[in-house]
Image (cartoon, rainbow, N blue to C red; front, side):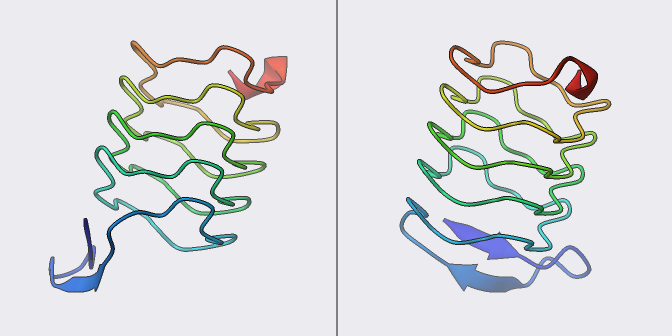
Length: 108
């Protein structure tokens, strides 16, 4: 997987998987993370505004207080993920697996 710059699409990081990665507070605005393996990753307080997370594996991920506004989460595997305090306004969650995810009513 490649992570590219939002300004010029230059590749800034190439990784095989991000399982258990510590991305707390990371600026991932508009990042292309389609199909990424982010199982148990720490994305707490991360800025994922308009990020493409289609079909990403986010089982048990920490997304506490993450900015997921306008993020594409179609088909994402969010089973058991911590989404408390996450901003999900405008996020596309069609087909996402939210079984056992920790949510607050105000998140939706």
